[in-house]
Length: 88
Figure (cartoon, helix red, strand yellow):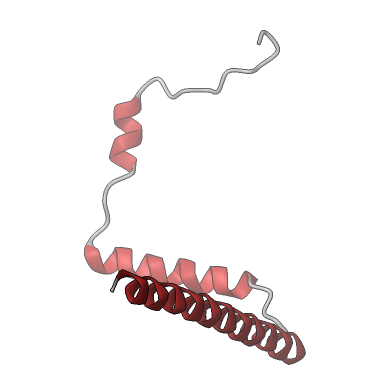
């Protein structure tokens, strides 16, 4: 604990708050778009081959999930039909 350095805290927080004045609506929207474009330039986009591979994997997982869910639905329906026939 003694080795930890304390962070420098500004003594006059009122001066800091005045500098962080809230921008107008259109300036905030413009700032948001500029930051978004800046972030999108840093994105590492997949190659067409990676995109096709990832899409096929996703479609395969969805198909397997659909089959499993249909199987559970079929089993549940059989169970409910059997119970209703036994009940009368």
